[in-house]
Length: 203
Image 1: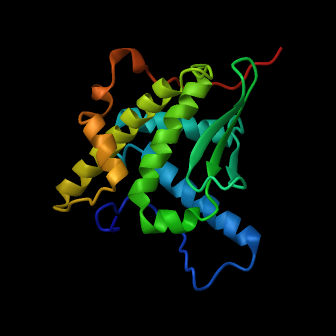
Image 2: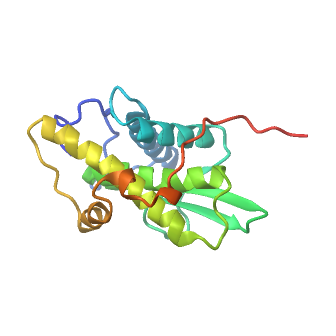
Image 3: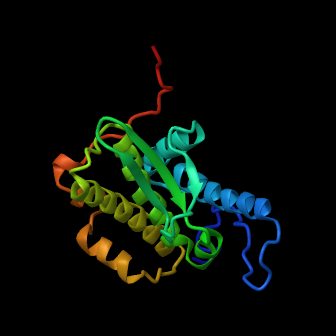
């Protein structure tokens, strides 16, 4: 993604594999800033003109910011941005996981990472709304791909308005073939409105 196509995206912290970070804390700060920049881009209607995606990613932003879904750096060797829920339907512990080399990944292909944020945000919303049962993974994944396609179609439209094209990865092409109309391609029973985050109530 060339910056001239999407000038609204904040400058991402650079990553130079020839000059690795000596200070781990500095690396963590840069990784966090890069993730925040992508999230802010997707949740702001002035930079990303798609209300459904804005609402979805804003919910994720609230859940992470209020530590209902911890944002952690991968230590299990997952390798890609992931949302996981440990436990069962009665007691669930969620995590939003960034790969150790997220800085490299987001600088090499930020469009892929933007789509990945939306894909995982859909699953985070399903967690927040109590829709993850442990037995409905195909439904969760299908809905997430529909929302990712919605985001990719918006990015495509933005690029076309600038007279440019996006080179999709094989995975992205598969997602777009499955959901050529984005969210509208999903079965109706898989679509629901994104709620506004509410502080947890105790007692």
